[in-house]
Length: 262
Length: 245
Image (cartoon, rainbow over all chains, first blue to last red; front, top):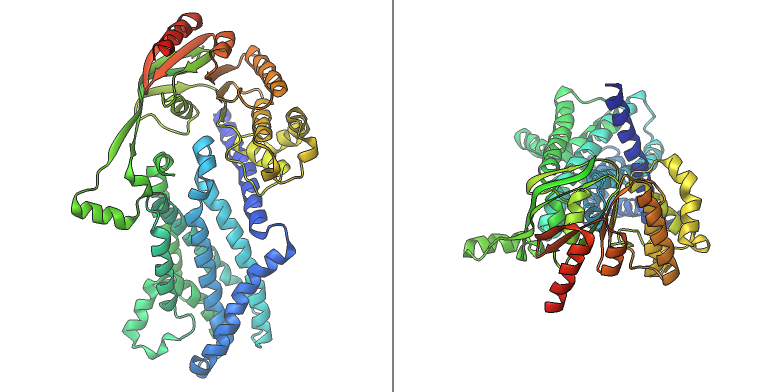
């Protein structure tokens, strides 16, 4: 009994070292050891935000309070979703050389990628809060509730990443299909427009889009000043764990089959 | 104690157009009826066992399934049929020099590879200097990995995998890399490990090397097991087979 517990613990410790080395690798590769590298990855969402703000404020900004923050919330969440799942999709293929030769758990490659995306998201989040402060929204303890959608979204991304990376191993054109899909999803996520002009029934349909749910949570907490109800929480957790569950199932079932296609 | 035991192990997988196909091709192929899956039998009914401390030489012409067998034993692939028991920690050296990250430095790659082989951080901190010295790459340790020559890469891979005392060591065509001096050094290191009681699998095209080192030999041809047994006997048979070809 004691022996098995000790062994389990050794196992965890063993992978902890590998995991931290993988995270380090992904981070170093992403930023190519430059300070500017990190700066660029923050600059790109900011530039996108500025362009969107300049273009859309005239159309949608008039009736929306704190339109910049409204826009930023949408952009922040959507960029995180997009980058994280795209990175996840490639995680098996880009480590094919290792997977073919060394017996390591394959999910570690995806998780390490997700961690570096999450850190990136965290950095953008800091800028987000600076914008929030500048826009005259005072800091509130309520903001800590944002951890819920943030963590749920990360879990959701891991799940989607599992599914996509498994598909990508077999169908190489999934990356183009997914690109189109994310484009469409962006327009359906109400990033730069509000859903208020739709009838109530249609507004509800938007909740079928998980990314929209996470964006809405952010907006409610930061702009509207309240914590969303149970239903929104249920959706947040529901989508996250459903995606994770499906993804893990796919990995479990195909764990040894990936080998033959990469 | 039997360290490795294979009983009727077969491996087959799907090959052909599949791996380069997109979703679109498959759907169109299914509609047209031109979509076919081909099964490839990489290994067929392999049965052998080796004891602790033995060195098994695996021989056979190209495409015989030697590397696949190594992958099965190291746990990367799973047998589709048959049973297998492998007891003990494994260090496997399959096609050295690959699987490193060319953007990272030699030092970073060393730690990453060590982590993949299941070493602990403390162990790597302790052993790192030994690894670099053995690989004779001290002056390159902070250079990018892509700056190394392929011989150097294999030297590093060899050093990382062999400075531990694994219970089972799998060597796939590794002793034929590096320059003459390093080859000698690596061979003596290998012998030291083997004498220390490690069970070893050695894939090699050098029959002389197999004769010198192996205690048992497994001969594969096109995925099938031709023979398994004493070194001298099977090496002679194999030599004759090669002459006839």
